[in-house]
Amino acid sequence: MIGQLRGIVLIKRPPHLVLDVQGVGYEIEAPMSTFYRLPATGAEMHLFTHLAVRDDAHLLFGFATEAERRLFRALLKVNGVGARTALTILSGMETGMLVQCIRTSDVQRLVRLPGIGRKTAERLVVEMRDRLADWEAAGNAEGAAAAGAPGATPANAADEAVSALIALGYKPQEASRHVQSVVQDGMGSEDIIREALKASIR
Image (cartoon, rainbow, N blue to C red; front, top):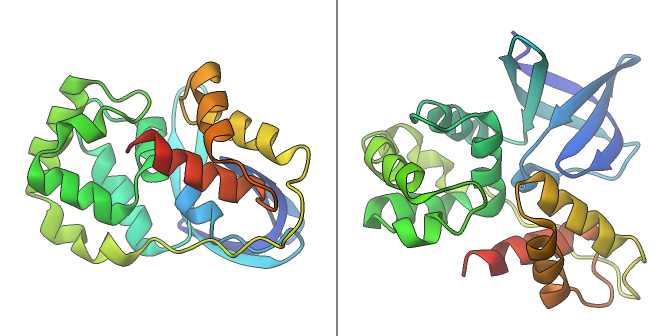
């Protein structure tokens, strides 16, 4: 089991990244909450990891904090929630909001996440409620993204944001609509993604 990695960030293409660890490039999938904490390409980063072994692939997931990884693993224990769905939940909803939704049985907000139907949302509420105490500390695990430099939005930033939302489970038209509703001059792709995700669950 690969539990953690420290290396150089080579590629950032949400929700995927490549980390160079002593010459070996590890392809990693990460929630947007982790992407907001990533340094610039070429800088060193430490990630907590979770290895999912399937018949057709070995998938490596990375997290900026151990609390974030604990929450991911807790979500995997919910019936009907796989690794990709758990990644989508962590990307689309801040930890504190997820805790609130579980406590208040806010199924309506949960079903706004892509790939989360009403039955899955109800299972999340029921099965996660008893586990809140185990990962309550994860409530403050979300970090803020660094402020973007002023200026025009890079031409490909909006396109990258749309691609990231599609990878997280949004339909192309939905992804494009959410991005266009929040994009402003000076925003990088990660800023656009963060605001689009917030807008999609309001």
